[in-house]
Image (tube, rainbow, N blue to C red; front, side, top):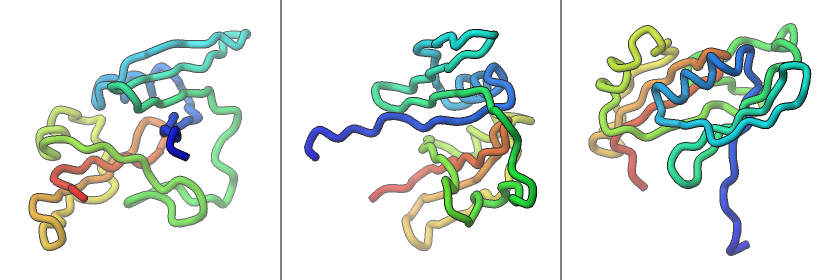
Length: 138
């Protein structure tokens, strides 16, 4: 599959505007388009750079009863554990986020594995876990 390119991550949101503001303010996303679905509902596409997209949908329900809330580095049951972004400086990023940096784990220093690798996990406005790392390289 030589022509395979990652497309997007779709998020179900309690309030699309609040989630959009979180990712545009703290992770450099910009609205690339909105598709009206009628009755005040829409799909919002956010773009960061040339190839990373988030697709925001209005949630049509809440977390199923009995499903634990995401904590630490994300749920350990089947599904998406977290989404992750690389930054130059974790501490500066968290400082700039202020109260929006709802940390669930870390920051942790993984320099024993890769010198300079540091990571923290935070919740977005909908409770999804977002990993913010610096210094990771393959």
